[in-house]
Image 1 (tube, helix red, strand yellow):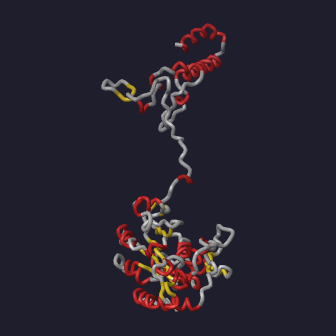
Image 2 (spheres, rainbow, N blue to C red):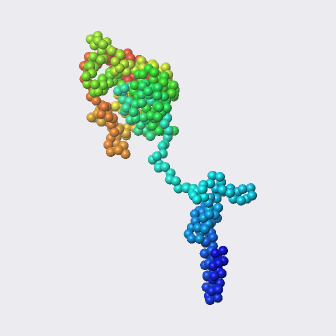
Image 3 (cartoon, rainbow, N blue to C red):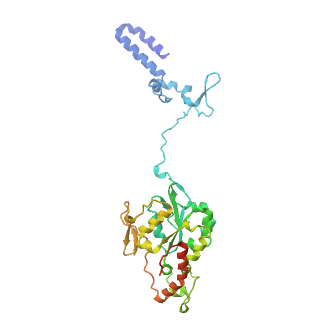
Amino acid sequence: MACVLLFSRLVPFSHRLKGTSVCLLSLFLSYLCYCALLPNDTVMQKPGDPTPSCQPADGAKRRLQKSLSCLAPIDARTSSADGTSQLKTDQRHPSTPHVVRNDTPSPPVSHLKFGNKKLPNAIIVGVKKGGTRAVLEFIRIHPDVRAAGTETHFFDRNYDRGLEWYRSLMPRTLESQITMEKTPSYFVTKETPRRISAMSQDTKLIVVVRDPVTRAISDYTQTLSKTPDLPSFQELAFRNQSLGIVDMSWNAIRIGLYALHLENWLRYFPLTQIHFVSGERLITDPAGELARVQDFLGLKRIVTDKHFYFNRTKGFPCLKKPESSGSPRCLGKSKGRTHVQIDREAIEQLRDFYRPYNEKFYEMVGHDFKWE
């Protein structure tokens, strides 16, 4: 209607214009009318383009704002039985056109969590002051091993919390990775083998053993650093030193009775599922001991002698400087303490006491650790 009125006003003046001017004016007026009646997006739409926006444009196009087609997107309309277009029942109020946003940002990669928390495939179950922390720190260099950093004490102190609580303490691992933890007191806790077996009979077990006399002195040295008023080593180790009667109830002595503890484990696990690491060889040949641990776990031998150097100050091997770190990585200050001096007679008495237990242990595991 607007175009008709405009043409009727201009016709009386058209006789004054030349033919070319009339044509140009007609084209210009037609273009204005065309733009006023159709939205820009529709004018420029190509076949296959996304559905045009129904937002009103400038000037005359505001008159189309109340059009039904611009009150709802095409996918919000349905056809009735008589072919007329109807709004879906969940269409929003006409005054607030529904806008579908496809530009919602994805969550940052740092927020994504990779892998799952799994119950451990392998556990370092003992023994205290044998070198368990060293084994854990060395083996976790391997890219296919993830380990809980702290001792969980689940199977000896926190068993009533349940397996889901235990699982929550584990690191996230990929399907191809091994989940590990270490709690040295497991080896001497009577209930632990049965409880681990109830969790999984396929769990692989690692025991780090050490000369039981040296281990007992190291144990006492650590306790003395925390309790300075502790009685002397001899007072605790012997019921009657003059007769050579050892106090087997003292925990530092009892832990070294490896054969007795192993008998309890063999009731629930075959010997093939238990790997024994020599605490002495772990110091003199860490790469060799770690090679055997990797074989036991079914891992490729990635941790090798190139990862270690011997720290003469501490008296045990440390890890060489990682590429991402500025310094070598050694175990904490609590490792490598100077042992308390024990008189030679007491040491010989303890060696005599442990000898039959050691020999039985050698026979059980099929290996002579040469603790003499």
